[in-house]
Image 1: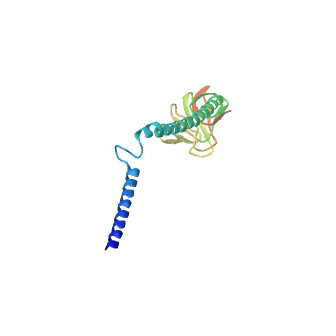
Image 2: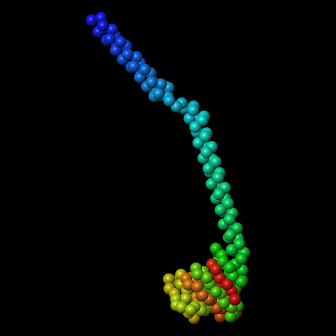
Length: 178
């Protein structure tokens, strides 16, 4: 009987030691409100500043990329506006083009034109020649442009010929004057 008591004591001691070790491990790993695993001071003094620093670096990098793209776009725009003189060019905004009787304005695909002063006719190889954006209709070869109507060339080789002494057009897009 003494032997059984010794084994029972040993097993009970072993179980008590195991329970103490498991309880200590749980308390050390988990934490609670009074003793959290990650302290608030660690979050506010270490983690948050590091995250904010990384965000600021990424924002500054992206800002410099966008600024470079903006400067390129501005330079391209200035080049287009300054290059869109009487001989032709392209423009993101409307340019005033003045023609004298007999001069022609050759339009590229997507070019828009609006007759402001004088009279002009369309010369085109095929019909429809131009799309009348103002009415949703079309203008065929030999047709006269209507003042203050916006026309768009959807096919290459469309020309507008001045039939008055002075013709003023608003033009946006690729064109040449001859």
